[in-house]
Image 1: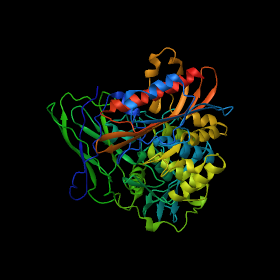
Image 2: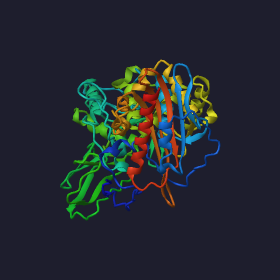
Image 3: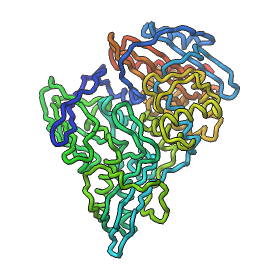
Length: 561
């Protein structure tokens, strides 16, 4: 059963209110199980479908799998499948393995996999603070503090008491598209507080200059028209808004640079409740704030979790300016005063000419979790900005600092070290946006190369596990067949979803699943199953069923081989 759509009004306001900008309204919010579904990169675009089956060649497709392909729901769709024995290279099943299909977030296997190999699973990011100027006997820094961004996605804001990285299947990065999320427990500003305490421990009591964030590690890139992404992150560059059953609203992180106010009220059961977030383009200016307004219907049950709070987010369009302010506030909590105002644009004109900072000027340093934890975060919940950043981090290891340069370096590496034909893939970013395409052969060539590389086990454990976690946690229909139930946890694979809005209604332009199976026999398999142009899509239940069908196919592979 599909739950009612929710609408909450959110505005970004500076000295005056901006006009509300409505979110693209897609399908109605579904029950709890969809939390991990569209986190697998749900994209809504305009355009038609491509149902052309030209060049499709069918060989060795098991009857049990053919029955899924032949369902009435897929009458206008095109399927692809390839299954390969990892150890021998034998093709066990194949349907259109050389055809280019849209694959959505399956693309993340490439960007995260290559970054994992280039950096290493144990690589840790170091984010230092340097002083520019001397410190007198009273602890006054006659100059600036510079926070040097490193590409650390978590910045100490996801660390659990046992030191592990907190990951929620209902990730807040997708709260607006899915209708809800579950926030992780750690304080998202914990890393900034640690840095601030180190500055104080270094003997600095006052900064007579300013605080500057250096994001010159790589060239910022556009993220789907929402914001410019740089090497600086605070709470994944979103502000979380929590709405309670009585309409009471709270938000995090708390900062004067972007407070949130609410006029949400309770109303009758028939009342609409709308969410319309805007990128926070006014950051750094006086009065910039988020505003939440609307009516909470009586008896409303939040989607995904079935309980309150309900989560929405504002996207931070200028992460460096946001980080500067939260660091100044953290310094104040640590007893370090800064003469410059808390709310102001990041003063990049004060940066030194080079990023070649001297170790003698370092007054604080935040060291990240291992990159494997970052890879797990990206792949388990399909974190788009994290995948795009992974592409940039890979590019840095190849001596390039732009997104175009990183894509070119990736193509060269795929053709060389990984044996992937570059004419078999079309990537426009690191996360699988737009008409990202790949052949099943190219995907499996990458999977095989990763499986024989130094980070094989790390890569596999970073993937969602069938019926267990991440974007495959809810995929459990296969277990209704006792002969398939043993596949739970034996399939590790990446999902990919691409939903297109057309004149005749939404089309599931791509739903893909690719990864590894440890078969019942012990045989090690690599596989991809993909379907393009599933229509009509009348509800999220229609998309959920495709996930379940592909999960059943993966479980069938476990059984048959």
